[in-house]
Image (cartoon, rainbow, N blue to C red):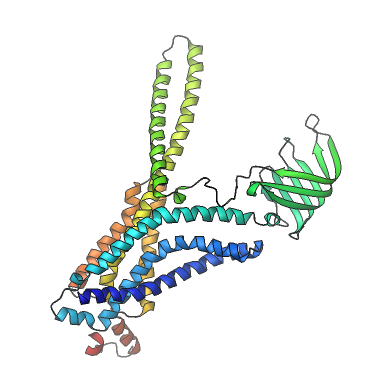
Length: 441
C-alpha cells in the first residue's frame, strides 16, 4: 500500500507543474489573438481580466488531459532512471499491479471533467461569446476603419480619418429605402451605440445627400444639411452578458443539449414523413382527369415539398452537429484514462526524467490525438461518418496503442533510452564502441 501511495504521490507535483505550463502556453496564444482588439478598443483592465477568466475553462478542458499525460510519462520515467522500477521488479512485484490508486484518481478526474465539460464549460462559453460581442461594440467609433469600406447592413461607410471622437470626410452609400443608393457626404460624423449593441446611430454634420429619382432615373436631387441622422437597426448583436439568448451546441449544458437534440430529432422525423406524404400526393395528383387542375396542384405540392426538404436538410445538419458535440465532450473527458494507459509504458520505455523530453513526447501524442479528433469532427459534421465513431476514434486508436505499449514494457522493450542517446552523441567518433553498463542499466 505504501508503494501504491508513493506512485500516486509522484504524479502530483508533475501534474500541477504541467497544468500551469500548458495553460500558460494556451493563455499566451489567447493573448496574441486578442492583443490587437485590446489595444484598438482600449479596454479597461476589468473587461480584459473577465475575457481571460472566461477563456480559462476552455483552456483547462485541453490542458488537464495533456497535463495528465506529461505527469505520467515524467513520473514513471524518473522512477525508471533512478532504478526504482528495477528495485520493485526485483522484489517480485508487478508494477502494473501497483497502479490501483492512480487508476482511481484518473477515474475521479474523468468524472470531474465530464461534469466540467457538460455543465460548467457551456455556461462560460456562452458568457464569453456575449462578452466578446460587447467588446466588439465597446467603443462604436472603432467599428469604422478609416480608408476602408465598412459594411453595416444596408449601409456602406467610408471615412478619411477616425480620431475615435469623430469621423472626418465621411462618405455613405445608403441602400435602405430605394433601389438606387443614396450618396451621403459629410465633413464630420459620430457613431453612437444603442439598444445594447443591437443598433447604431450615425450623426453626420455639414454635408449633402445626392439621390436619383426612381421614376426618372436620369434626374438627381441634392439636399444640403447641417445635421443628418442615420439609424442602423437590428444588427442582431444584443450584448447584455446576463441575457440567456441563443446558445449554439457548444454553449448548451448536458440537459439543454439532450432536450434540444430530442426536439430536433422529433421535428426531423415529422418533416421526413411530410416529404414522403407530399411525394405520394404528387404522384397521385398526376392521375387527375383535369390537366390544368393537376398541373396547378402539382406546382403547389412540389413547392411545399421543396420547403420541407430544405428544412429536413437544415435539421439533419443541426442534429448531426449536436450529436458530435455530445460525444466530443465525453471523449475528451475519457481521454484522461487513455493517456494514463499510454503514459505509464512510455515512461518506462523511454527512461527519461527530464521535463523537456516528457513535454516533447506528450506534445506529439496530444497533437496527433487532437488532429485526429478534429478530423473526425469535420467528417461527422458533413455527415460522412457516424458521430459516435468519429468522436471516439481517437480514444479507440490510442487505447490500442496503449495496449501495444503495455505489452512491450512488460517484455522489457524500449523505444529509446535518453542516457544511451546522450552518451552516443558525446562519442560520435567511436560509433562501434558499445555504451558502458552503467549507462545502459
